[in-house]
Image 1 (cartoon, helix red, strand yellow):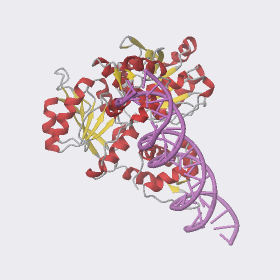
Image 2 (cartoon, protein in one colour; image 1 turned 45 degrees about the vertical axis):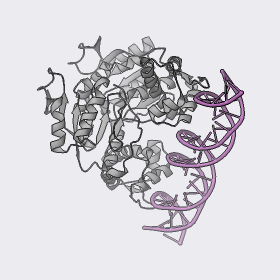
Image 3 (cartoon, chains in turn purple, green, brown, red; image 1 turned 30 degrees about the vertical axis):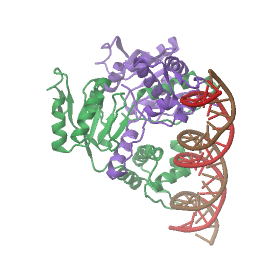
Image 4 (tube, helix red, strand yellow; image 1 turned 90 degrees about the horizontal axis):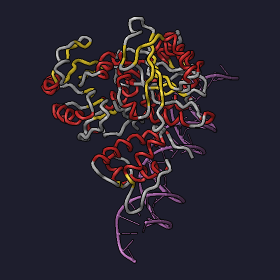
Length: 219
Length: 219
DNA sequence: TAGATTGTTAATCGATTAACAATC
DNA sequence: TAGATTGTTAATCGATTAACAATC
């Protein structure tokens, strides 16, 4: 049985918490403790952990350090992945500067844009390259991941070209839904969804607003 | 019966699609058409729409323009909300520049930071103010929403102070899980979760990778 | 009217929670 | 050993999908 998206989403939360417990010097943590800190049911924690193939010790709990390492490995974070950044606007720059990617096994190895004013400019340790050079680079390096931070209008044509060149996964920040072959992985980020939820919860009468655990990001 | 988070997340997708259909000149759209374009079940579309209290026309479908307006209203986007931005690093700047907020009823009316080099600098039409002035402003203006784009270390203390001053909802980009009274709404954004999913899907054998519909954002 | 489409009730599916036997 | 905690099977819950009567 394959792991559910819901489980998958919780794994980074476990990792963060385990890293914290590790820094506090804790060797072991029980499912009840992890559940309490993350406001989850303890059975759910055990199910999630079991899903990844890790086993704990009855009477003791889970070994903090090895569980964290195991989860990192399960998520494929131990074999660093390289990605190219398409679009170096303000969002692209924020993404390029985001240090959290490294921690989760992603490294941006090239940045592209169409704006002549940006091409040649440094961005971190990279230099912005003209977009037309991207397909060739993808072909040569067999790059698999593209982070799409271009305006909505440009997203589809750019994605088509990159998919042709061999990109297997798009992390799509453009806000434009992409039509691509089913073998291509597309992961959309959409602030509008989050904002909709926030806005709606704010519009509810104060009393009836429970503190829900919601999807979150680390910057 | 209150609307589910899953339904709520789909509403902005409907809105986007309806806006597009509207610009194509379509007056009506059936649930089957909407479902096809968003890769959902048509019953789900009808359920979602019904949840918001909108009714379609048998034999015709849903009136595109009025459904979009209805959804906007349902999500509370018609009464613009004001927010303050806390932290004007690269991410804060990207958020400040993000034009999509306006479309979804959110307006950033002030930006704060602790960095003396940033204080006094312009950011869009705003000027960065010293963070210590934020609580007073929240008290005076009864501001309800704070967008938290500070480093993880600073998130909790800053949130505590702002919550005391009267902030009712935090949009938390800091990556730090916040402990706040249950009446306070916290909505976490976490790129790590998305990355975990993307990474895991990439590590699966190519054949078994279905194109899932996933959470997404618009920039 | 006939027939396409909505709105809604019933069935299914999957995820979460409860219960408990296995383990150390 | 006794007892706490894991791992797992069963029960529950909620969301999605199927079926179909109501509508225009």
